[in-house]
Image (cartoon, rainbow, N blue to C red):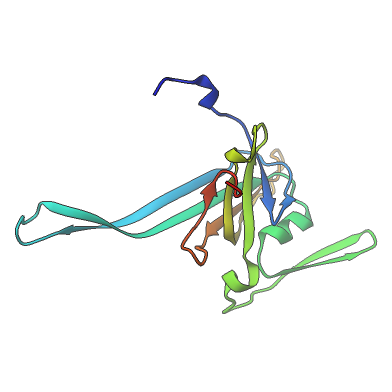
Length: 168
């Protein structure tokens, strides 16, 4: 295959939860895809591996949200309730022990590169669960950034995520 510099991509992405843009990020969005396997061998060949079996796959997305509004915290944190009264806002965070997050709080998470030529460059997790705000640092000389981690769950067909345009 010949080299093509048009295939080299850089740049930030917009983060959408259920079609709503969360705004600016700071520090880079990280997608991690890992595969857990189990090695198999048999009596005929001793310790020589005969096969590698997939036993699971995990996809996580770490998002550093720069716009730390109460609305964004609510979108990123399960089991919350936002109250808006004129110019006053309050976000209540509930424990919700035993809540099945997939049923109660799953969202569609989509990463759209800001200079994408088309939806072919999108990355989408149809059933994503926020693992919550992993950190929110208040420091005198640093910008406040809310770290949020999402995990992909499989749909009825076993799909965790996809790259590209859903209509393909």
